[in-house]
Image 1 (tube, rainbow, N blue to C red):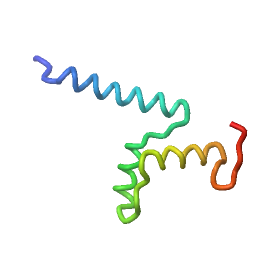
Image 2: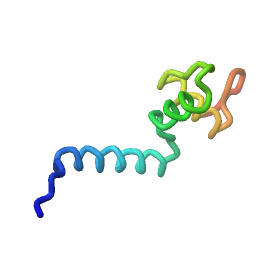
Image 3: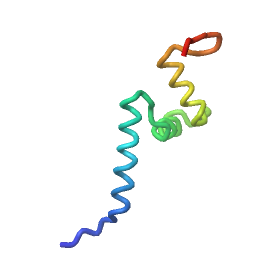
Length: 72
């Protein structure tokens, strides 16, 4: 039996999973998962842009936000 899978497709899947894992290891959640979750469970609410999402996650992780002054 010959495998009908596309090797380039498999490499692309591996690359996406690798990138997602690397980002999670340094504390950056995956934006695509966020968008899928929001569309599925909160379709009536707005979705943050990728930049807004990144800033939101940074503020949540490091305690930033309006009026907060950090040294770095």
